[in-house]
Length: 67
Image (cartoon, rainbow, N blue to C red; front, top):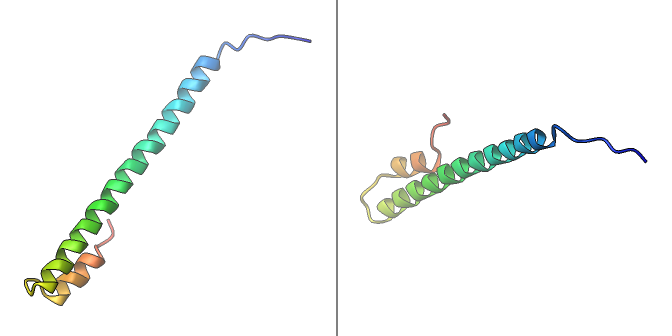
């Protein structure tokens, strides 16, 4: 049986943790964007139902332009 010290273990784990944190942050941003788009579309649908917004406004809210 042989044993070999893992001198780079701490660095490797730090890199893995940083990569995981970046993925979590990206997912948080995407979730927030989707939530805001959903709220915006719901607001326009409500405005249309109340007769304040036109049907065109509602369609544009349901299909926002791609960045």
